[in-house]
Image 1 (cartoon, helix red, strand yellow):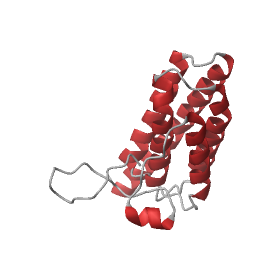
Image 2 (tube, rainbow, N blue to C red; image 1 turned 180 degrees about the vertical axis):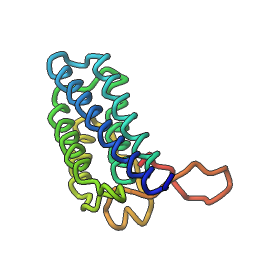
Image 3 (tube, rainbow, N blue to C red; image 1 turned 90 degrees about the vertical axis):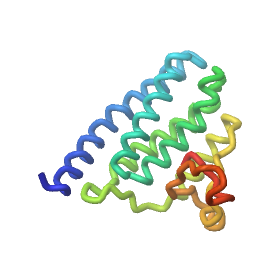
Image 4 (cartoon, rainbow, N blue to C red; image 1 turned 120 degrees about the vertical axis):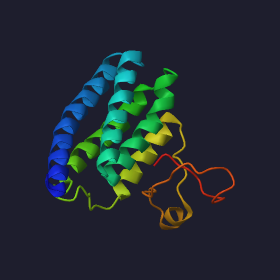
Length: 169
């Protein structure tokens, strides 16, 4: 089977799955608007974002994977502690709306999202402020550019490549 064809098919399948998962995440959000800190809705939201991020990572959809990972990691502590406050829900909704919009703009051939990540940064910072969580640090070159770190960071054995942080996105 042609590799390009298999990637195209996998990407199209992901985009279809992603729409279903985004709908599920939005339903979790609606549930949280009705019932504050509902543990089932929080777990569903966490699981849905995790699934979206893992699938995007597996396909190499770097921008989508990093944004979704960052979003999940900001929400996870609040969800696990049962402290996802009502004030965070509009910021979360804005993040999910941006994610849905970005999935529509993913290049169907390459899987790339050739957009400025400035809006991602603004929304993630707004959410981080409301859920009182820090945004994970990025590598030095991304810090200098003032952008979300999109580099691949892997855990390295102790004693090798000192000074390299392992941020989640």
